[in-house]
Image (tube, rainbow, N blue to C red; front, side, top):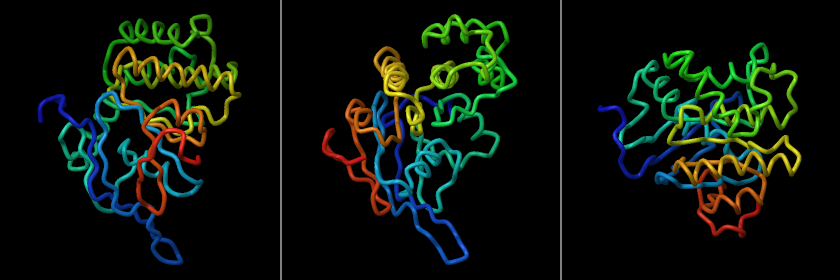
Length: 238
């Protein structure tokens, strides 16, 4: 495959199942999901706790494998890739923002943001420039050298957003990105994601319990009974 030539849709899922084996038998969390994501989409995935929203997001991010079904990214069946090649895809084309920021506490803000590019093999000098620019974009130009352990919760989440966006990925996956933040800080983090969508065409897929966030994203998919149901913004209970 050429280096991920652009195609439409950006992501296409067909016949997706995810089952887990337990001592009490098989639990089917996802039951034959089909849907597509276009470049530039802003999608909210909502539903009750425990229905499998994070599981679906992890499969979209290739952090988990489906029991059945295909996931195509720009036309390619990604799970046909080797483990090493799949890791390259994640690093190059996907950005992740989690409720718990998963920063490396022994490193500074700038070191955390530079990490994805260093893993990819880009130079420290280039990643320093990119990282500083991104931290300024998220309002942390005055915290570049701070150890992340000394930052507030909102500042840490903004570092996590900067890290997710520093390589300008076409797809950003966010799992409750404002769940642990106060409303004002949560709005700031959300606006950062929306700004990337507006200015760079970054595709957003966000798992959220926030009705406000879901309504602002625009395209709302409800996960219920292992299926995804598209609904109008403002009508879904999250």
